Image (cartoon, rainbow, N blue to C red):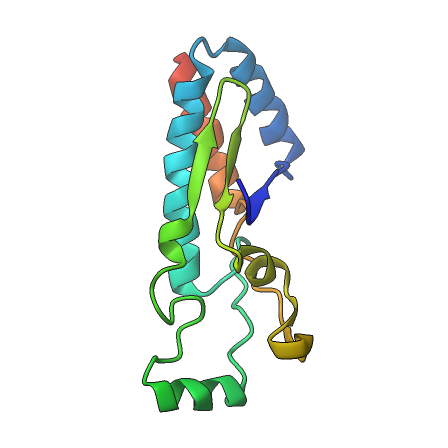
Length: 151
């Protein structure tokens, strides 16, 4: 997948150990990873709509210059949804070994990580993290794994 994809490590060591144990028992891992993929796509889209990071922090607001330019174009003040096309690029790939989710969009990396952009790289965009797992996601994924193996 070109653009940006994520490898996520579960931060809660207890949840991570329990998830590892459950994954060892899963007979059809691709089905589990597809279920997780649908969940993370849903939460990623919600996160973009809510303009917040996986841990619930609000994204940095658009600059006054950007807001003024958008007012002239009549495209509004939403972040990453000016034209409505970016959210539709969020997707996942599931296999028996893992789940990869992200976006093939050329803007995905700069949206997630921030950096220099524009003509001559004259503008610095802040990081507005949208990919990742919230603590709630980690708990939900563990419950999904338990359900998948019948625990």
